[in-house]
Image 1: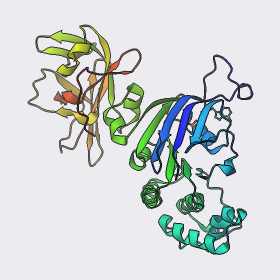
Image 2: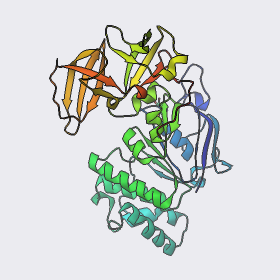
Image 3: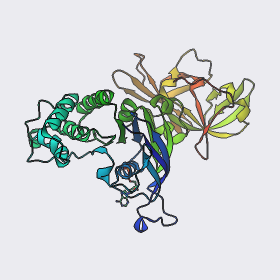
Image 4: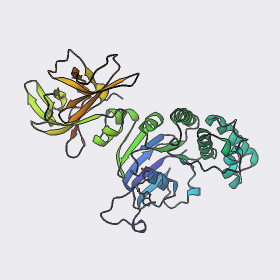
Length: 378
Ligand code: ADP
């Protein structure tokens, strides 16, 4: 068991580890804490610095500046083998001539663990990842999903203080991904090992992790529970990255009307009321980005909003339908489970769950918050 702390960690790949001015850091001033037994997901698009972060924690990559601690021990200069870490990468790299049992036993034998203790450890871990029936088989006879289970079992059989998973599901097809996700979650409940998973797949991070750290261009954008990053995104990047379909992000101009402040849009007559709690931080003609999730926009013939809008896009996805309407130059998407089918050009009236709209600074993308304390949903 271990607590992991990253303090102001930087990584530059240039100039023999020293930073060359005016080049971006692969990881830029990253600080976060992973509590003992916690499951943290590092999430972000390709190239945002996820794997570099994991590799620095594992000791496979030198840190340019900052500190990494496991418990109270600063591990910056410890060799990977001395960090008590279990690693499972996306390519499973099992030893082909060895059986699954011998693959699982390999590291323990190298550390001279007695055979009886090895057998006991494998018998304890193998059922957790459903590899107990595969122990006599060689890797070439296994499916991708089975190989990945063995890979993860190998990482945890030695009881690491910290388990690091780098995109462990990315080679697998949809159904297998889902199955292995359940297994990883169950395994974590059983062994309660402090775990970090790196993934570009938000569904994976949302379903597995207690908290998610979202990165972009080497910089941590937000860290929080899946619900908090979904409900309370810190900026437009997080707002657009978390959620499927993604949040609508529309350039808007704030206008004061008789009924209070409204979002208005260029080349559109649509007016959406802004929750009154924002009144103190708004002014007329202020440019903002409106964020609203597709589930928080409703087609409602009785809507009090005067605007009727033609349907531009309609997709029937079976259990839900997606409707797109044009707001000026932009497309606004909404999802509905109503069994109503629309044609392009049909006129609809919209209602907005106004309390669920978000405001972002039009220039910086940072969330504009009301000065009133709101009770979050999570
Ligand atoms: P991610 O895992 O989020 O896809 P990486 O951590 O692999 O991102 O990469 C972060 C940045 O560092 C990227 O710009 C990538 O090109 C760069 N990078 C990664 N590894 C190296 C390397 N060995 N040498 C130089 N640049 C690298």
